[in-house]
Amino acid sequence: MASSTAADGTKKLDIVIVGGSLGGLCAGVALKSLGHDITILERNATPLLHDQGAGIVAGGDTLAFFKRYDRCGRSFAVSSQRRQYLNLNGDVVHREDMVQNMTSWDLVYHILRANFDGTESVYCHVPPPVEAHGNARHLHGHLVTGVREADNGQVCVEYTTHDGTTSTILADLVVGADGPSSTLRRILQPDVQRTYAGYVALRGTVPETRVSQSTRAAFTERFTFFHCPGVQILAYLIPGEQGTLEPGRRLINFVYYTNFPSASLDDPSPALAELMTDVDGVRHRITMPPGKTDMGAWEKQRVSARQRLPPQFAEIVCATTKPFVQAITDVISPENEFLGGKVVLIGDALAGFRPHTVASTSQAAFDAMILADMVAGKVERKEWKRETMAYARTVQRRGVQMGQHSQHDDLPLEDHIHDRNVASIPRQDEVWPDWATRGLD
Ligand SMILES: Cc1cc2nc3c(=O)[nH]c(=O)nc-3n(C[C@H](O)[C@H](O)[C@H](O)COP(=O)(O)OP(=O)(O)OC[C@H]3O[C@@H](n4cnc5c(N)ncnc54)[C@H](O)[C@@H]3O)c2cc1C
Image (tube, rainbow, N blue to C red; front, side, top):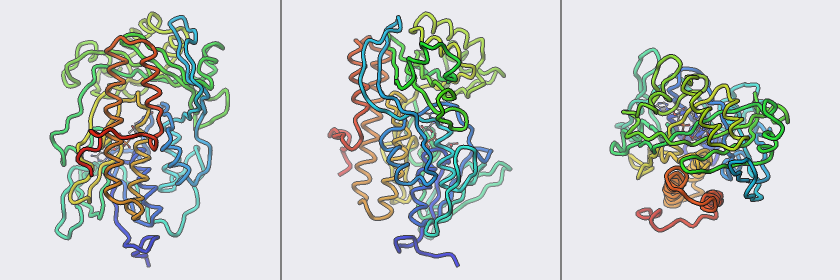
């Protein structure tokens, strides 16, 4: 007979997580390990999310999460020993020794799925089940449409499946990990808007062996940057196909910020509309998926890259075959708990950071860990609230400032280096400014 108590002897909870990307999976893995039963509702129609083929910087909290919860045990990051800045000729003009770990979205996703619900993949082995863990269900094709307090004191989550059937599920706790356009946030905080920041990130990868020797050297064990007015580009090595870390099979990943002024994403300027219209003539609002970019529109970016970027960066931008585009947006919720604390928001649903902060995955990992600690009674609710909200507010605002400096101000390189160094402060060493903790004590 199924046990009604969790691993620590408290009542076993039914927890529903909305969204099965990295934030939802981190929360699922952490809460399952306490012995609670977890159901993830993911709107995507396929059992696995399709990656955007891109890299993520594994920050301190991502590494801490893996150390604490990952039972697959494989290495998942390529290290960079140094940050360096190039001038337009491609010469290194500044260096900072700093070890950072770079991984890929797809590798992290598959490791988390192996830990959560035992999904097999070529990326990693599936760890054996642990008796004290709760049950884990991952339901794809489940679009959450509503959330409300149920008569019995639980929370009722409404969803529609891909065949159009509408149904409900009851939960003791609902975790909103449904991303920067969160449905739960829209229902619970209808005034919060996700706004366009006036520029996009052009992104892509190139196999490390498909570039010249000098370009490969510029990005191997290096986190490399270039700034000029209205432009920032950075690149680093990430795991290759199927998560391989083998030298020669890894990928160079770039993020190239460039301005596309437009009043909004709903009424894009002609240039933005052209960039965001795919090969089939379909207009994408926020993300142009890899492989869909219209190569006519992309050719303009190649020409501009050759004019504006150091040769190593121009080479990788021109060499990528499946570029994708991400419009940069801002969003933050003023609250992260609702219905008496029975619904919480985490990760991008709480605060969508600009990518300059390289902190989105770390936020998701941190929010998941501290939520599990609060549920387990190891962290007080007040502390949970303070740490998650102050972090969200501080890093969200920092991202806006970094973006302003990078894309709209004309600043000396030292200022960009300063911004990058501030963004590297480990979360536990941050001193939250007063405004970031206002109303939380
Ligand atoms: C498919 C995908 C690929 C990505 N690839 C990269 C990458 O290559 N590099 C990178 O740096 N970042 C990538 N990201 C973003 C990165 O995962 C996040 O910024 C970070 O990990 C924290 O995300 P999150 O889980 O809080 O939100 P998100 O990653 O945005 O995930 C939200 C999830 O909720 C689901 N969802 C939304 N609304 C509903 C609803 N109403 N009902 C049910 N489900 C819902 C979405 O389908 C999605 O899976 C990707 C995100 C996704 C979804």
